[in-house]
View 1 (tube, rainbow, N blue to C red):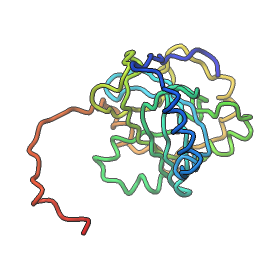
View 2 (view 1 turned 120 degrees about the vertical axis):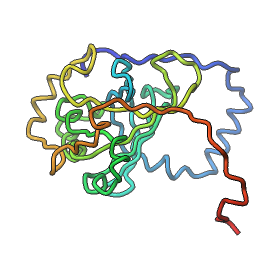
View 3 (view 1 turned 135 degrees about the vertical axis):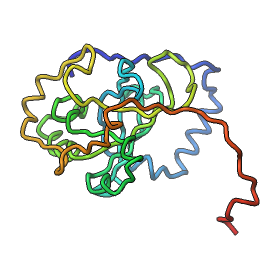
View 4 (view 1 turned 90 degrees about the vertical axis):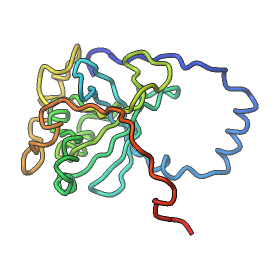
Length: 227
């Protein structure tokens, strides 16, 4: 990767972890299972921008697990370090699954073709030839990203409303970072079979999550799921 890390890494307020807490964590880690976490098999790095403000760009480290061949889910951190902040998540689906979504839903998903072919999306530490075997598949997918922690603003805690994030779709959108070395190696890759859907990437417009007060359904009106 060429360029610089354009995300920030704020200090989290609060008391340092005590020895007693660390001992309990060691004990529980030895006894409990962490199936969903242990299923993570891949580290992807890319950049997201807020759906309503392209100038706010965040480096996003994805730690992903396949649910099946057509869907993977990723935890997103602001760095690959052990003290990284969990700032969001992304769901990645095949073109086939994306096409089953309602049109209103499609607007919240972004394409990956440009990210992959430009070199912006990559696997840190993995040789290019191995990366390209999987990224050729990723180029044909769509992703839905929600960020909870606005680290680009320097927030030391996850404040505000979770926001839909978008991905880069053309040259000139990313500030201060170049990936030209890898771009040439990925020229052969192709995007979705039917082309990028016009409703994806917010339909070419801005998209923002807002908070609206509404009535809360009483308990009696909610179907009982558990007996």
